[in-house]
Length: 293
Ligand SMILES: C[S@@+](CC[C@H](N)C(=O)[O-])C[C@H]1O[C@@H](n2cnc3c(N)ncnc32)[C@H](O)[C@@H]1O
Image (cartoon, rainbow, N blue to C red; front, top):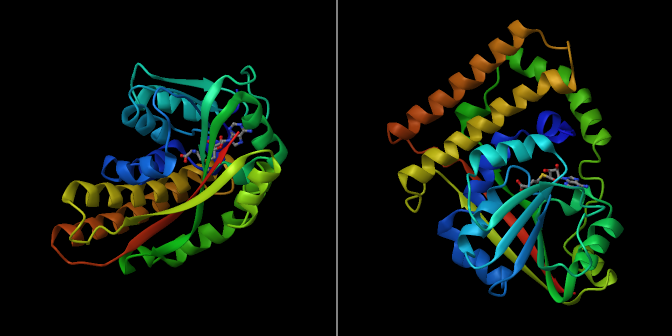
């Protein structure tokens, strides 16, 4: 059983909340136009994490089948409990560098923010192998976006700042040990790598996802989900501490840190509820690279 990523790097709740916003039904038309997935396709998602993209794909393409794999059993357990049963969706534990599928057994492969963590020869090579001739390879990769934090969330007490300073070397070591972002690629390198690994008709697209709770375009349910995703991300960061740095922060300190972070997010929520716009914004820019086997 391997659950290092979901305990030490990014916890399932963080990824699930943020990806539910990224792959929300309100954006389905934009994503589907970029994907151009043929009807009836057998789709394989690599590195599915807690399953939010797989869930959206299965719902947006009811006539396709979606097989979603990850090597982290913690994410798969979360997906099984949270995503629920969709008849055209199954999750499986597998390694993207050695896929347990026959040559040419899928019409489409897709991944979101996985390429940068897996050696390119294996990442592209395995997808090339399991795709049928004419099959579609889709690689989604986060680019530099915009992140503007509300002042009330940016504040940190001396206690909080000291804890994060104490943890910083351990967090860096955990990232290194798990090859996090070991293979980053620029907007030029990524399509070139796809071509170099035998894919043709390579195209790129860029989709922006604007997460601004105070925008008039954002309805209340979406705004609350955005604020909750921020809170979840902060709390999950605290929950990784005992895994990456056992014994470095005491249980009492963890409880105090948690209480301070919760209080900040409570204040931000109260501002929203009182109608005091903060114009905090997270704007994700996601590159979609599409190639044909
Ligand atoms: C940044 S997370 C993205 C997860 C998911 N795609 C999402 O957007 O929520 C990277 C994911 O890749 C998975 N991963 C990394 N290397 C892998 C490999 N060799 N085989 C399968 N999954 C892998 C990790 O377990 C993790 O779930």
